[in-house]
Length: 307
Image (cartoon, rainbow, N blue to C red; front, side, top):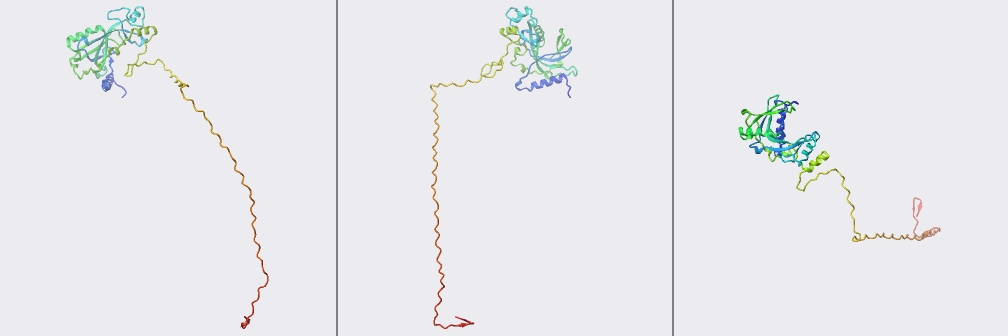
């Protein structure tokens, strides 16, 4: 089903945060948008020393309403802070220095349609510094606030500048299953990296003259500090190596091998063939053969022939 409630959305966010590796949970900002919106909260304050305060300037829409720490000590409005001086000189895009308190909380939001509370998520509640008196009152009445669950109700329409918040302790909600007691998301938490910027005098002067702060360098690595490049430029080709001709051995002269002399073979002497000698034809003696010499043997007659 495509539709879901705000409480369901908060549950999905909380589950994703709880499943993240190494407890790397993102801390958000506490917000109740509409009149009578409610939330259950567990405040991470055991004493007033747990509260974090800062004096900040809010920059205009061009800087997406970012906040920058004031360079003047609290209660002082000297020229130590160029932003204070700019405000005094009529710069309306910079807000006056204002004192803030930043309260760490775990919060379960109530869905107005279902009256169901979401799973708890870690947030920072940014309030005027005078809100600290409300925290002090609750500490006197209930002891360490991280051990209690309170209900916070918004009184004021969306975007109203007259909005107030009521913090009530209701025992029926005061149980671990209502709001988690796991504040580990705030271990080593730095409010100056979460809710406002701390800028140097030089950076602030650069902003006042150019309209933007210098680029923030990446954290230093084990290999050394990282300096972000200002623009991409193709690396220059490496120069061809040079050689000291006085030290380099002379290249050997190339001598082409002489071509071998060609000697044509001598033509064979012609010897005419020897005419064969035909043997002479035998001499034929045509004389009749000698007749046999008659003897004294008597002639015999056989069948009319004598021999």
